[in-house]
Each structure stands twice: as structure tokens, then as C-alpha cells.
Image (cartoon, rainbow, N blue to C red; front, side, top):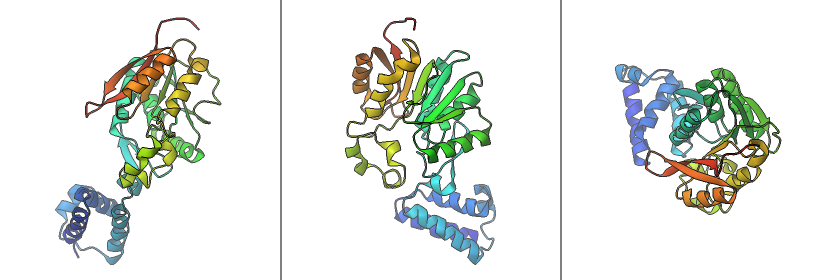
Length: 278
């Protein structure tokens, strides 16, 4: 079998299963440790039995709907490669909008916390894009924190990590709270794509029946860390902006929203109703 024949075989298999055949090319390239351009230029090269079996193992994982990012062990976020696996949620392009908003909004030297950091993509990116910021990150999963710390070390960021639920163990006064919290109502989990439903950590997807339980907890405890000042910047789910607006008002904040690439309100910026001192 040649590289070209191997590609054709697995691309057909992916198409029959409703998967992107380009995923097959990426996995073959990973097995060869070569870029896609190499596959095209070396279609007539023979494939060893060991390599064919290695490729088959990768392909079977993807056909079982394991996320491509977990199989490859990495994904791109804000132009950088982050390690990812089933210890944490896979970073999405929409979350880059959250980072952009924080980078734009915070003054020099601000202190910001990333609640539920997962892979660390938000906290690490903030530290690298804005080295003047003092960045903390929390997660209740020790496994996720280990992954986040590894990404932090590999990419050369400066982040302080704290193991706790939301920010229960944090006492530092802050200027901003950021989070991509779990926001999927538990009843909606069954309708998610199998890559998400069956492979990503459930506690990173849903906080409970409502979907806004974690956001409410952040708002309830935010005054302890922010005083009467400071921003809360969150990623939210589809059609949640009205409920988030009401929830923010209940806790003395106004809500403004930034749309994602599908014109859905995705990033919530929650500001104090009135400026004031601590």
C-alpha cells in the first residue's frame, strides 16, 4: 500500500461515517510526523505494515467519535498550540473572543482570575498577550490543573494556579473575573454531538438543570474579591443573554454582549451599575 492509497481508503471511510475526510489526512500526517504537503508530494511512497496499523488505531478512535483534538493531543488557540486531552474541555474559537474582550478592557497591571481554567487556554493567553497583568486561575479538577500548568510551562506564561471550586479559596483583591463556565442545562447534554457528550468532562459542560448555576455563584461571591468595582467577563450559551441580563441586574450589574461568529450573543461583560469605591 502507498501513502496515496492509505489516504484514499481512510478518507472514504470517514466520508461514509459523516466525518470530515480532512481529519484522516491530519492523522496520517501525525503518524508520519510530516505536514500535509508531504502526503501530497509522496503519494507513491510505500507504507509499512507497522505504520498502517498505527494509522488504523488512530482512525478507529476518530470513527468512534473521539474528538480529533484529543487524538492529536493538541489544538490551536490564539495562534498557539495547547496540549489537550480528556482532563479538560477543548478550547473553542468563540472563547478567543472572551480573551480579546479581556485584553481590550483591562488597564495596565490589572489583577484578573480565570475561573474554571481547564486547559489553561484563557489564563495562559492573557499572560502572554498582556504580560503586565497579574493572572490567577482556578479549577476544582486537579487533573485539569496539571494540564493547565503544563501548558503554562511549555508556553512560558506566568500564572498562579489554585485548586478550588469557583474561587472559594481565593482571598486576593481583583480587578476582573473571567470565565468560560459550564453553561449547558443538564437536560440538553443528550442532544450534544457525541464528540462532546461522550468524551469531554461533564462537569466542564453542565453546572446543573438551569445552566446558569455557576454564573450565579460567581455573581454572588464577586463583591468579596472585586468590591464595588471591577468587571466580570463570561462566555455564555445560546439564548442565555436575557437570563444573564436579569441575573446581573439582581446582583447590581449591567450586562453588555458581544456576538460570536454566528451572530449569537456569546460574551457577557457585566459592569457595576454605578461607579463607586470599595
